[in-house]
Image 1 (cartoon, one colour):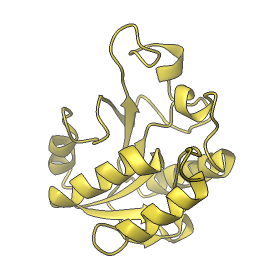
Image 2 (cartoon, one colour):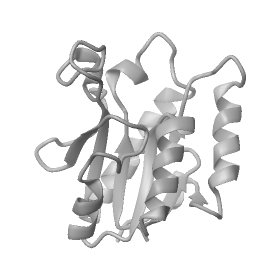
Image 3 (cartoon, helix red, strand yellow):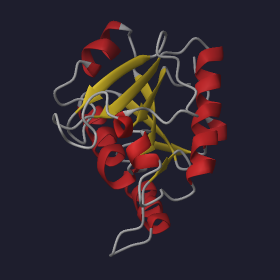
Image 4 (tube, helix red, strand yellow):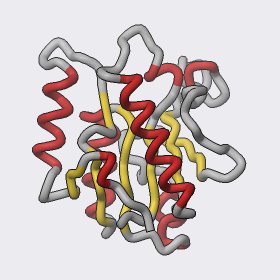
Length: 175
């Protein structure tokens, strides 16, 4: 049973950019279901926004920086924070917030699999947190080297065991 949900980079510029994420509508539905389960259990929800410097396409407040409108986030209740690196911990107060809320286990979902999802899972474990990674709860775009589905499958296999508990989203329960 997980203590909290961490949603990474579900922003307009990534979710609806020129290159569409793999299975994006299914992912959105999966994350919204997890949000509802977390809310029903009164589990905290943390939401990271990747943030670029002033003048960049994802500068704070810019249209592409905004969370995807169909994401069921409640900005008055959920914990939104900005990050500038692939790790949700580097340069943020996420670790302090998790410790203050006595969070031990995080469910991590969002984008992009090979960057912010992978990095945050590994760093969370280094910082003493247990991580649940729904294998159907993260995505990315095709790259010249690999299709997105292969990237996702590779990271699910690589992270499982050593870094995360790999499950299907429907198996996630919150305390």
